[in-house]
Image 1 (cartoon, rainbow, N blue to C red):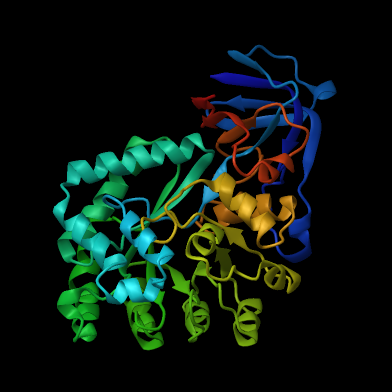
Image 2 (tube, one colour):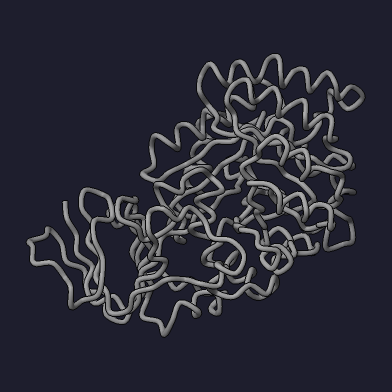
Length: 414
């Protein structure tokens, strides 16, 4: 199957295969080709260039893109998409003045979601999750990482990870799976956190490894959750099963999580709403990519990750949705890109880089998606007729998407 996209107003995020991510001042640059063509063959990007250099060949389908822009689909490197029900009552509690931490201490938050997971059948949980995944793909997401962490028991964590595995098998988009058993301490172990960590290490990890259910391991390294020593112990155990760290850090406090994540060669550190000078120096000496979650900051009314500070220090960074029922009940990456520009003072170029090529890197998918590169999956967004790609974050309330392609196949059409 070959498809030829013609008369593309602007082909965005055109990259050489050797470029895995962009950092610092390079994030301001977004390579494009105007008046372009794009050739897709057997699900992969095969060729592209200006219209005057279009190859002479027969194709199965021609798509006229006059007035429209093509860019790689969004790469959402941090989500908790598999969950049961919702937590709208906590949303109301926050409006009435309770903090996220107060809600958690009153039995809400993560522990509320774990109760719902336990009460929900695997089939119902799969159906809810598949519906959400379809919705975010229609909003332009073409690669996604999904975490467990709303189980906190052996059976429930395995249930979530098995559902993620089913989504991998049933959807034509790259999905990465993360084991986040250390998301919170369950009620049963509230006075014996060490015993719960032993359960993670001695029971959960071997079973997850036996069924090959996870690509990454994560820990919520935060005050009242898991300490530096806890994090070190869990990440060390995960390494025995070849699980790469991706760590929740610095959402509310800077307690040294970035340093331990860096020492354990974490692929990413996510949140970073609080960032000390020491944290910044550690990141500059590491290969770990920071991931900001602006829709979480928006929903909880907490500080935003200091993007300018990170990028002006020469660092790469990604942005992701943090889609979850408690602190970011939206997987809309178009909104994430808009918030990055509006609230984090990122330029459209920086935000699009963070949501595509750097998002792919933060999932270990830089060879498959995230840019218009020969040999990568043809996971694409075709916009409505718009003046420029800057209109995408500007139009924060209305996604400017006409069609979404996964491996060259039209998944969504407006």
